[in-house]
Amino acid sequence: MTLLLVVIFADFISLGIPDSLFGSAWPAIYTEFGLPVSWAGCVTALISCCTIVSSLMSSRVIRRFGTGMVTAASVWMTALSLLGFSLSDGFFWLCLLAVPLGLGAGSVDTALNNYVALHYKALHMNFLHCFYGIGVSLSPFFMSLALSSGSWRAGYWSVFGVQAGIAALTILALPLWKKAHSEAGED
Image (cartoon, rainbow, N blue to C red; front, side, top):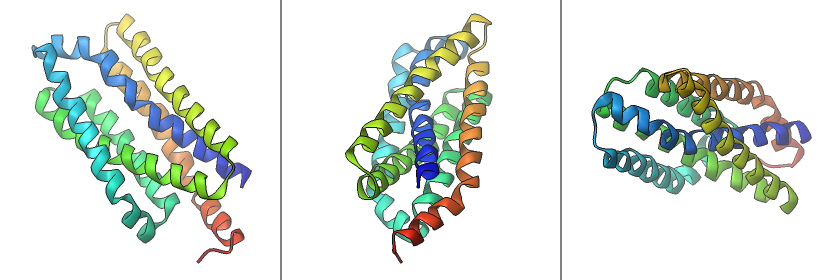
């Protein structure tokens, strides 16, 4: 179960990555697209609303597909949303991509918080949220590097690479969820 915990920690890094990325990229995005500064609130509100909806629905989804599968699909969904942000050419696409980004984030957050609370110690829960902080800290760093070379899109592209790597790790770790599930004597 230690190896599974490492994967869970990596997944929580992936949860934090998108949360601070948009704010650091927005000054370059609204300038390029010719948008009012305030329109950032529309995108972030969409992400937040979808996160809430996903969190509320996640119990049913987790019961049906399992925590590992829901986490893997959700991390991939957020990775693809970040890729979409890097390719978007207008405000409509940012809003559209905010939906799967929020839905994926809500599922990862709820699934992993619940799983760690049920199967690990309080210490592990504290570390889980420390890893979220790593993700939140990494993405503005990557974006600042990209912006210094002139492209917010490159920032999204590089963060997509990190997110896709974590998603691939999560998919490769799916057998660990089944093993941990059977060791715990759960059906």
